[in-house]
Length: 320
Image 1 (cartoon, rainbow, N blue to C red):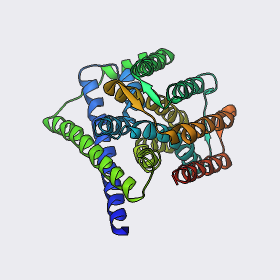
Image 2 (cartoon, one colour):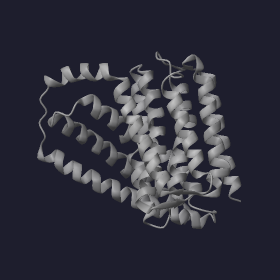
Image 3 (cartoon, helix red, strand yellow):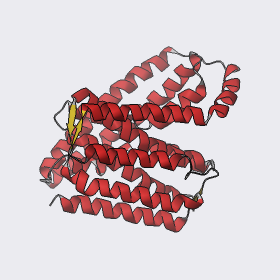
Image 4 (cartoon, rainbow, N blue to C red):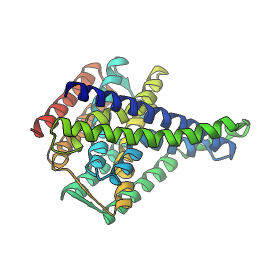
């Protein structure tokens, strides 16, 4: 059994690597396409940065619905949101010896984050998400994109001026890479679900949401970590924090909304309602309190990591 567990853990790591790297390639090629066809780079950037880093979660969730593993959807999205706020934000705060934002998050981004958390709580409370609730979530995604574009309209125009002077060439290799990336995302998602299915059976776990809300969630949040880490290295703390918040909002609205819309309805694991949802609320409230001064200190980053360890422990204890 030890060999089987080790083999499927390696398969999970490998498939997540294929999934994340393929998504990274797809985002890069799509950015080139946007410039080639003169799509305003700000609009492309807003949608690609916020939505693009959620591609691994979205594709895995869509395939899981049609593979009879529908509890993966909410488990993955909810677990990824918790990992973003507690694990990723905590790691970034420790690595950079604290994060400081120049804009007031309490007045702008955090209310939108809390709206998404409240809506998620409402739609999963009865252990099922209906088609009408899915449409409501998709409407929320559209509203959020509109807010991003409207809020940063001045920046959009300045980016547009820079864009006019640039010429982008699209090669045959770019097209091949795009096709390969799409295929890689599909293969990576399929292999990820195979490993989750077998690990769930080997560990005699209650349902798929346990692994999907922990191991899978950590793996699919790697794009957020990479993008935010690069932003932190360049001292662009607002971009790093904004990417995490934006990814959480899109995870709630799209990663749950699209698979539910395609399936017609979706079952929610009781563990996600009784343990996952309270921890998401806890992580959101903790982040709000910490961000009141628009700064995340080193000690606060360590506290976030401690909360995440408690979450993982509670999820696995709840399955026993």
